[in-house]
Image: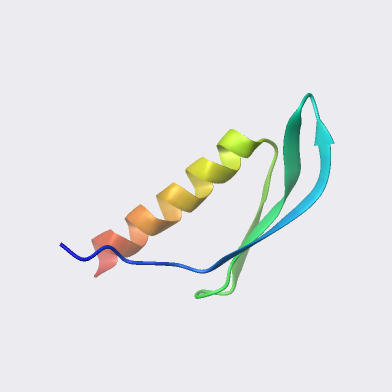
Length: 56
């Protein structure tokens, strides 16, 4: 099974409570969203790749 890959550009705008805040751009789709923690960033990227896999 081939996994879809994606290109993400992460902009860390600051840190608070020992985690990152910023925005992430999914370059393949020109979609951008903000995140409030590193865990949220990971979930956003994982969810984007899962959605991409379901559509293929």
